[in-house]
Length: 533
Image 1 (cartoon, one colour):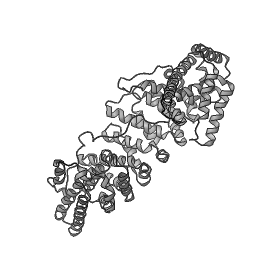
Image 2 (cartoon, helix red, strand yellow):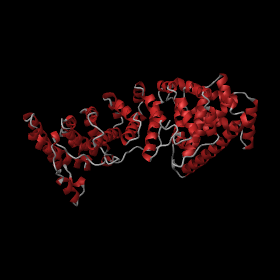
Image 3 (tube, one colour):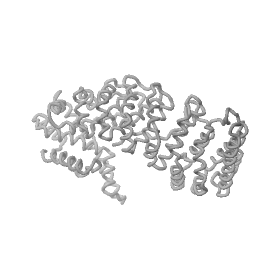
């Protein structure tokens, strides 16, 4: 189940925190200017950075940096009580860290940088007594791991990232960030840069997402930031990083759940139950929070926490208010109710059916600020999934009767709607199948899996869920609903065999992502529908 529809690469920092921090020496000592002669020479050169930077240049930069580092260590040891005496060495070290940034223009040299054994020296400076030096390193790492710098250099990027992680960069980055204050503009810039480095590392090496949560207290730091009541830039970026860490990691989802993460994220979205975000950045933050919530709702234990925290009720309130978060609330409910009957039962018990079926009937409030082309269509697909989850989670009793009764009321209007959706998605899938047949005639070979995936993208999954809902209704043995289904099929020159064909394809392609037992149960349920029809 897909969590998010929008990409995740952040630009420069907002609110005036986009520039690298000015250098401040120890004890408030000010150093004027940074020697950027090497950078300027490269910019003025008729050759590009990759041509200008070779192994010889790399060695020069590394040797100079190591010499400056040794001088600074020696000066600090010699003049412990007199910061002014080692201030010059600190300025020199700062300058050389700035010069190392040119290496971002030649990522193919990263393996040589690692082989020079300079990475440990760079990383260890994150714990330097002077926070400005540590923040210079953060800025350097941001440049070296930048997405643009690493483009088409996957292997060198992995070599660098592996070396950084082996030398405890994750622990030291978070440790350094904890001593920074957002009240200071330079330190705020360094906080953003730290988060950007972590994001870049995850991009190159996805396993970093779990490593940084195992080895550091980053998750707890992010939770604190998203719980701030007022909107601010750091809250937005914290929500984005949190969503990235949760996206593909069951371990992180469970870990955050154990830290009361479900409650924290619900608190964050509850602020928008009756109001809209004021700016595009605030809208993005709210979508990030819902991405976090949907990720958290994948493990079973977090679904339980969601129900206990009255998350179902909150989502229904958000839907009723018809504000910006309307569609996100439907998405969260869909995740919560998938394979979790208690959430389905709670939804019916707190009168969620009326709200859900208003959306099912196409009465979806359109927010002018949401300009995605497929917004209404995406919500329609979510609501179909939500209704299918309700049927799968509520198999008997008075609550099941309440669900079925929705399809009887108003002269079976919801069955009419169901058949309308069936025909629409059926037409789309048929058109895609014809297009794929033509591709094969044109000698473009596609394997069965690729053909099936293309059909899923064109609407086959929603068509299958509509067929599953029809199967549930048919198995209720309600004569009036059965007669209505048969009448509508006949009007479209179709029969139950057409529905059975869709169900059979669904049955044959049920995966074992949730384990072999769940696969068998799912296939047995679909086979029951096929037999009944």
